[in-house]
Each structure stands twice: as structure tokens, then as C-alpha cells.
Image (cartoon, rainbow, N blue to C red):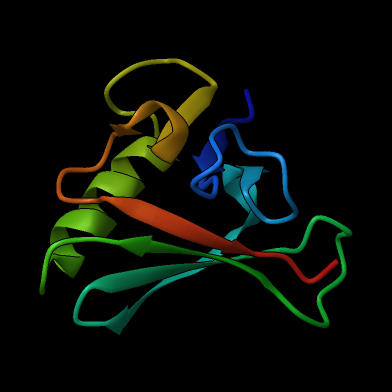
Length: 112
């Protein structure tokens, strides 16, 4: 069963309704998880159009230096160790649901 990672990052007007404010990717699209700065971790993903020329990225904002925890919990979600749900909410700012300890938001960048 394919599993999916769900992300939202709406602006201050409420529900996600703009480009790059909501995304869901199959876990098989994850190419790499990278510490991008002291307070961000980037997930590189196969773009939604399926090409390999450029990647989509989701950048998670988290506590200073908390990369190992973010990567560990993200790997657990990808492998669905905690439950068998195919739908894994990673970062849902709209509903203030962050299922990785210390994550407070995300940004979504799509190649298409």
C-alpha cells in the first residue's frame, strides 16, 4: 500500500487556497532529507509532473539544531511504524497539527 505525506502552509487569510500552500506526495517520491539551516530541514521530492530535471521541495521549520529528531520522525512516518494509515499528516498549519515534535511550519516549492 502506497503511503502519502500531507503538508499545508496557508497564508494568514485562513484555508490554503494559493499555489504552493498545500501538497501531498507519495512516500516513494522522497529523494533526500537534508539539513538546510539551523532551523530548517528540506525534503527533496520527485516533482508532481514525474520528471527528473528538477525537484519539488518541502522545507520544515523546527527548533534550533533539531534535524536528527525531524529526520527520525519523518522516517517513521514514511515507514508508517506507528500506524497503518496511508495518509500521514506531517505539517498542517491550517489546523495547527504538526506530527513531528518541534516542527512549527513548512514551505512548499513545486517545479511545475
